Length: 273
Image (cartoon, rainbow, N blue to C red; front, side, top):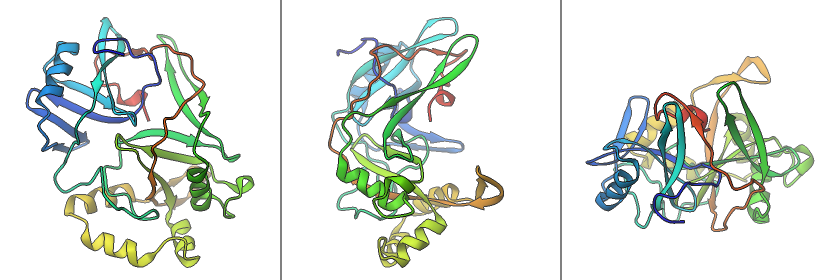
């Protein structure tokens, strides 16, 4: 695939915004610039989009994707190129070194990473939102080659019984552009795993003490109690737990066709998890 080609795989990954000055992580009232020199990347993005600002997506294969307007309300995904350098952000670690499995994830928590889901039967899949001018729906595409050791880690963290597919609590995993994978578990589940010595409270406590103010603020926002979908009278808090670095290419059973978005502008975040 070369710069400017229509991107015909499943669109997923970390969401960033760009302008002529750089690339930024943006969520709600937070806007954090990368300290990396990304001038060549910006040049390529503008060459493809013909716009001095907009949005990009970077997936776990480090492919940079953007959307261009085809018609008034129709947008097409386009390949920009390969991310060939590390994006560094002050006070946040999206490519941590030597982070222990079972630790708190140290990077961005929303709009970050390619999102995949897992079923109660232990199958990993990609859920794609499909939109047309008249309706929207979702299609499930199963992963063909997910690494078994990572699946066991997910089962251990999310299952009611260790490594038991029969009692696996369905949920999501995220993989960012450097292969770092994490999932979310409830506060009650985390306490249980600490009691069973699967997670280490001393490591998690030390992490919190070492976190920057930005990391603490992002984690506090992420862990705010929210309504339990299965029990509206109950509130639950979720914690991001690191699963390790995933270095295997993910293949799904999706046909090769572009994911078209129908929108009046390029604010397409609502069409991606």
